[in-house]
Image (cartoon, rainbow, N blue to C red; front, side, top):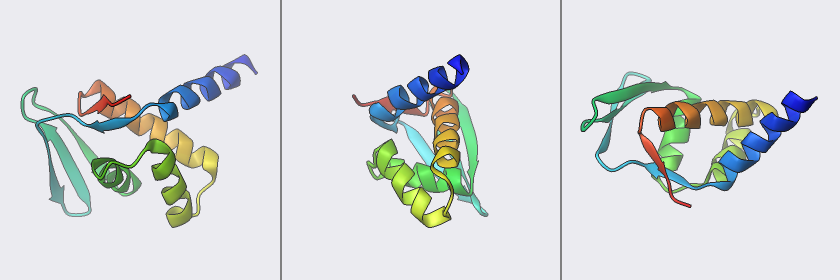
Length: 103
């Protein structure tokens, strides 16, 4: 139970922050995926499917709450599923230095 509460707390803290792509990040579509590269560091990730869609929305200035709402509607997935996927994506992008906090 305690682990579930800490996970919920983490979700709330991450979703309460604003994020945007870090300066110098470029995106190259490759087939059905997108390669997100920060040339200054050489760090990159390959985003496929829903992750690519979330990136596009993030680039356009959408908040995580907005991305969550739109993706639930588009993919007809449960709230918990979308939350977990977004949390994982934010963690990967943040560790790679591809996004930065805005608030």
